[in-house]
Amino acid sequence: MDSNTPKKQGGSLGESQSNRGASWAEKTFLAICYAALGLPLLLLVVLIVDVVIDGWPRLNWAFLTNYPSRKPEMAGILPALVGSAYLMLLTAAIAIPLGVGAAIYLEEYTRPSRITSLIELNISNLAGVPSIIYGLLGLELFVRAMQWGRSVVAGAATLALLLLPAVIMTAREALRTVPHSLREACYALGADRWQTIWRVVLPMSLPGILTGVILSLARAIGETAPLVMIGALTYVAFLPNSLKSPFTALPIQIFNWVSRPQAGFHTNAAAGIIVLLALMLALNGAAIWLRVRLQRRMDW
Amino acid sequence: MSSETAIPRSVAARIPLRAPRSLRERLVGVVLLVCAACSVITTLGIVLVLIVETTAFFREVSFRQFFGDIQWTPLFAKKHFGIWALVSGTVLTSAIAILTAVPLGLMAAAYLSEFANERIRRLLKPSMEILAGIPTVVYGYFALTFMTPLLQKFIPSLAGFNALSPGLVMGIMIFPTVASLSEDAMYAVPTSLREAAYALGATRLATTFRVVMPSAFSGIGASVILGVSRAIGETMIVAIAAGQQPRFTFDPRVPVETMTAYIVQVSLGDTPTGTLEYRTIFAVGMVLFVFTLALNVVAHRLRQGVLKDSVQ
Image (cartoon, rainbow over all chains, first blue to last red; front, side, top):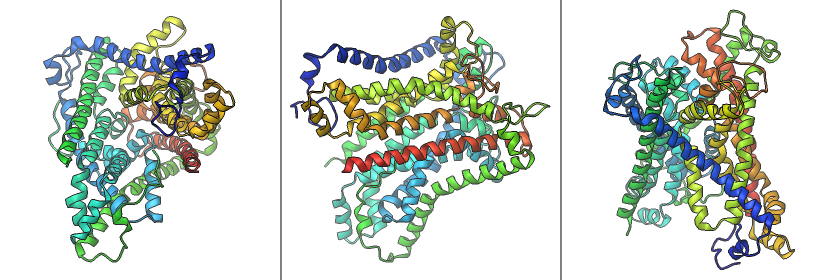
């Protein structure tokens, strides 16, 4: 093994090898590799710059506080912003207890059996189901069967089911990071299983769980297809005032504007996208900040 | 994506499971089991909803009308239910996406696993993940207002809605999936194999292509299949930029409609629930679900094979 390869596996056996005496074939190959990595990242930059150039002139206080309008220059995203906020809070309120509960069950409360492996297989399969299929489920189950209508709570319940696999997986990972010795110490002091989980394991794994949940929410805030299925409205001139009220959300509003032929609405869509990306960035930042902060407190 | 089965169980699970002492313990156990069961109920719910509505659909439309026709016009007066028109749209856009994502993804993976040093690897892998986190409605906007006009400069016959532009953008979206999972598979190839190749006088390039990639084949295969599955299920990019004209074609320049885009189109209109038109979206959803589930199961099998190999 070479000195600069602390890892046990993987390539780059000798770093020196790559620089000295690399054949032309290898140099060509490396050039192709740089292009393969660079091209998508370049497109990412182009995408962001393109959106900012298109949308920046439209972005002002009125845009954030106005209701939608037939005239693109009058239209704003207030109901969409408020709708998205309601949606995220409700989604979190449903997905966190269910997801963390399932994770605790699988990690702490039971030992491997046929049931747990069935649940595990099921979760990994659910993670691969396209989001629009969740929309179909939400449409039949929440909108029709439970008669919640095309409401905020139906949208949130659908998004919560969509997030569940991700929340369960991150929560399980967080639970696994708690050292076994702590649980043993707890049992030795006479605590029962629930006391151990509630007082020791959960507080210890909280940073990991919260980070995972916030990252999942950052993804959910951009989910469009399931909400289109649920029937989130595209023209909403009021703010949601109860669980059952009709609603719109930021990605739905963007989709609506993109689908219109007038250039003015495309500008609005670009401005909406800037807001959406900023919100996602903020959530991601919050997750990182939270992890660092809570981890520091946990140090001993 | 994967359910790691080889993880050591926590202590609590190793404590002999006698009947819990207190009522509270038992109650908590039941509540937690219900939480865990929710995911199973979700799956059952999806399957049940699709089966019920699809059965109702096939009571009115025969299998021959569905699988033996290449026209899809359920919303018109003269109705045709040939699913192949939608399948061809899906296959076309997904194929373009895969042809974009796989070469790029494999090259990126080979570089990160075999050539890049640890610092570059740690920097680039999360940067690629940003691409996977961009909302698809944003990609749709990008495909429609940037990529299509750009491509039209080179291909004048390209329509305003087409399969090419959303396909390419979708390829960029699934590139991180392919790159990241293939990289994991290549990185997990034992160093001894590489050392053996070097000892035989192979160059790094030859080692990468003749030793590492074949050894990681099942992992790379799984990454490609998961990429295909994501492309097939992707909705907003194609709904925005590919158009809404179901047609049986493999011409990337003309408007097409994918299965997902059709479902969106119907749910945007005001089709009354319980009608045949309404049920078409569940029949299409069923086809979509079966496609993606089959791909995911194959990918899962392949990845399990990788895990077993790397243990040995």
